[in-house]
Image (cartoon, rainbow, N blue to C red; front, top):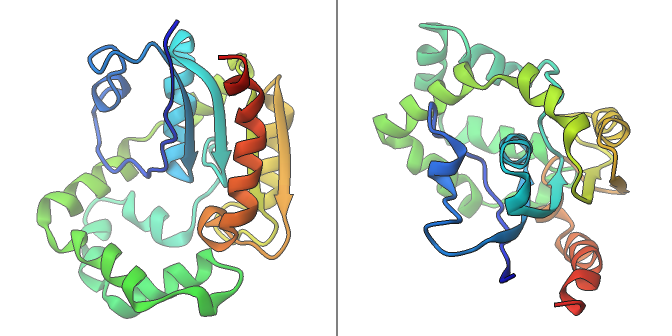
Length: 215
């Protein structure tokens, strides 16, 4: 069996697209992969792993969605017709910076460059429509029901001071997934992989190395 380490950090903003259309491992001739996802990207991977268990060897979930909990207030507004469109019109560099600061425990790590790389894609109407579509169509209750059926080894990484998805959700997720290990990082918020990259990279390497050494 050909094994390819496919570390995927993403927040999928495409609505109404089947997971196999986003990551078609058959087309690119990858039979089995390792996946990593952050926030909504983690929720998307939970769905993918439950649909295609033979394509997934290991999962890494970083401050992941998937429990059908109430989301950050802005995202709850996004789900509302008309209201969501109005909220998008109010999103500017200041609002994006505030959102990023909420996702970091150490707010001084947020840079103008980070703000730009979020704001710039949102200038395009098609991206805004996709974001609204995803917010309104994601079935988190269905994804939550998938957790108990995941049989792959799962590493769950969570920032202790996550303001978007509280660390208690990480503990609950670890209880629901049969073969999961939870690591809580001190001095980290919602974006653990950006705020504490050395710690996250080391955890990922340690998690994947035994498998790679058997290749």
